[in-house]
Length: 280
Image (cartoon, rainbow, N blue to C red; front, side, top):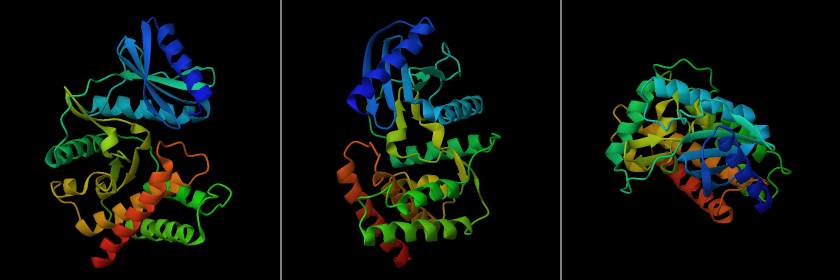
């Protein structure tokens, strides 16, 4: 966020917690992008603060969190003192979550795969109305195909992204009938290694599709430990994942830290993923 907007977001997160009687003496910015995550102390709360225009997304995320916690999924939970309500303060939507201290150690590929297996099993016990993964691809494709929304893309790179998004989405969508609810973006940044064990966070990306779509967001070694994963489908999903990632980075209003680096790196990794698909 822009510095002035970030200051307002911090005030909104602090106010939402204090309105519930939670003590807030200190606020630390944990993550700063198009929405921010704030650690509030000493109450031990993680506040997720997004522009009020994303209220529906925040409400969807809290709904998913409630259902998955009830199903025993390995996910970060809402703060029980705050409840599931999303608070609107000063033009921001604020949800309040349990803050988990890091256990420090890196998560081994086998343990990463185990978390996804347990998470997918819990998702099969949940009944939620969520978008199909192809709907998310369509949003990325619309941005790539609109030069006003992605003005920095060169012609060849725009053609690469547009072609990959359309072709891989169609190929994956018809490749398997084994679809279920998914996390949507279980990359390493969304898997916390806590004292309770690994927990998935950022649940607003929940969608429906093949499990390989989720696996494509994890380090490559993880797929080797996930029983039943289709290697060919996983390669196609990984190419689609990098195409979507790159599409987000080339949006004019993208705020990801290190965006310039990831614009180039995303396209590089997309081409490498496509080479692996071609190699079979």
